[in-house]
Image (cartoon, rainbow, N blue to C red; front, side, top):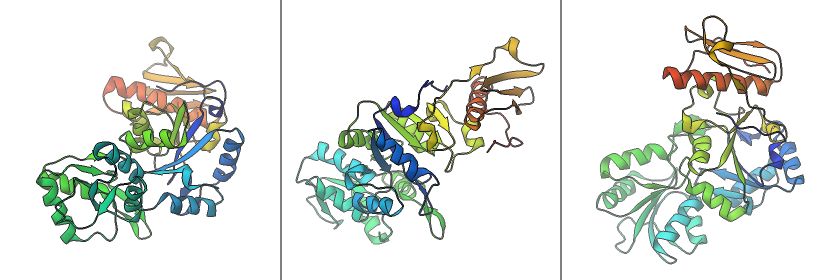
Length: 343
């Protein structure tokens, strides 16, 4: 379930790792209040890192974009899945190794930065491995040749397995779709660098520093599960893709340590809801929780209802714990389609 913090999280952690899309910005614009929140965070002398599965852009490009949005960032503050993949390949093959590379400039640059040699010719006989990442200009004839090299036994690292990416023309297939195709054809599974695999967060801690890190994200299946896989506490913010139905349906490895609507949750205490015993439930109730003036109960019909008043973050905590308690016993999440979260 959730963890307790009697003070703001900023006082409990010395490194805050932030996902970008849905946490720091949405559709190219900063999430309201984020520049101010990150300014306060830095005033507390907490290490800040921006962590992204996007392997197509260099860390410098990402940092420049953040600075334009009013979130000052240096290249050192940004860690990409391409950099995490480069770290894995360096450990495995050593400096100077030639890697068949299929991706964009961000991946090519990350390999060069650590002394690896990216090779773009799929027929090169001297490569010792394959690394793939999202690249909008990847052509099918090269992809076919890379697929054959993987099938024939060349070790393979993938930057990430994100199935979708946001674009100006809508949600489009991400690198994960390509990975699935290559897996099916080659009957090989890659070593993955990006979230929810742990190498990206390990690389972030190594690069930015910190003894007690916190991962902040808006996606349960990448950010929060990635933190769990890396043994890192997590804060779910509700400014991105995860909403009420996703929160109550979260599996054990997707459940955050803390929940808050916005990054203001870094500066406030986090009480833990009380799980209601059978004797505390109203007639017809099968699971429930209460916190900060709110009471949430799941009835025998599987519907979750909430009563009371209080802070909006406490509402979310109460609903989450009541929903998870019910789901763990019933094997499926409660019905929440009629609930309206407070603003």
